[in-house]
Image (cartoon, rainbow, N blue to C red; front, side, top):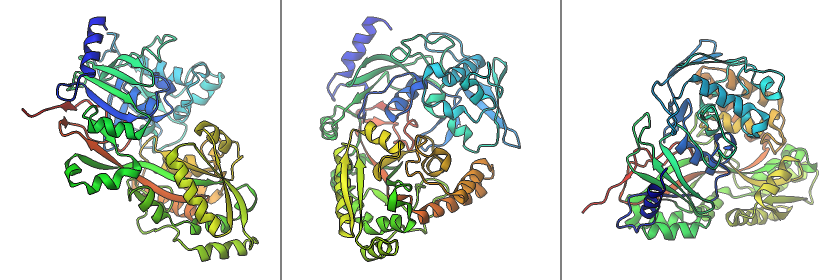
Length: 514
């Protein structure tokens, strides 16, 4: 992009609220890892990647799968063969034509160990993908491009969520030739082109005038990176940003202010906050002890006092917005006497000692301290261990934690994305199951749900598996968060998304009344 255009866009982006026409987002608290789709392993990276790139399919704000670079597709009756019919006339932002060969090369690149993706696993359901990733095959057996506008994918076994996996940012399509600095200078087919990336400050995008679905309504978009929630609030109240994720602890204050009501929007975040209980460590291997932890904590009070009522009590791991959620289950009631009784029955009448790990996030620190008070009161003597998030996460995956306070955001909107990574024995440790939970009956139920294409049967299997998980208590189940957004009155066409990459700002614009 010409220097004069860059300077003009930057000037617009810095203009005051009365004259500003650039859309300004304030939802990101950390710098993206990269703008290379293959390296998209976190929310901030995935959100930015979705502005620049397209996948064969994508999500809308309500988290429904919608066509992307594939205009339509068919699935064989046995669920093994997917035939994608690609859009014609699509070009990358550098003018290079898009065709089926870009799908093949993009997915080969994702699977190539040299790319160091971290998300190659989302393509493992494809026949030959694992072999290609290991270097024992020179092509992906289940991936074919018979012509420029058709891609045929064959799976090793039916997987109901496969189409949703392809909507993840890591599966997005890149050009045939990717330079070494691609993560800083990306080229996609998406609605926005990168103009400037001021690390740890903002990313500035210009609309792609040749976007196949029509160019965005606004000329430019600025994604600000604001680590401090209070700063984000101040910037919103000054009119310098258009969208604010209201901080958890301030939600009630905002909701009680009637003057703010027109600008507030609530949406389920597909986020589970929980304490993973390492089921292999000492007394925690006894289900009675794990149930005692759940009875010991007044979760409803935590939701009311610390989350301003913005949480839904978890009675399992499936969020209320997803199929498989059972609204009749209420979770473990707050019952300290029952907690002490279970500890005694498990052979620990004098209590036990545990370490509760958490990150250095101030909000999580408050939750951890509250949990500590509840657990101490029933004889579960708790020491809090605070570490930087990556260190805490690594320790949990290595099995070195008793308890760890965590949250889990859905990568894709399906109950499988909670049941399988968090609790299936195939994912113990590094796969996400840091409870090291293993139950053959639970695994069979989840495996059956993953492979069935019948939506009704899959929903029933999800519900059954979730009930089994609640009873086994491999977690201290806390809550599902309900996001609260504040939107400026001049912002039109923005719908708060259920899934992080479900809002690409295509139809959003600033409209001010005279």
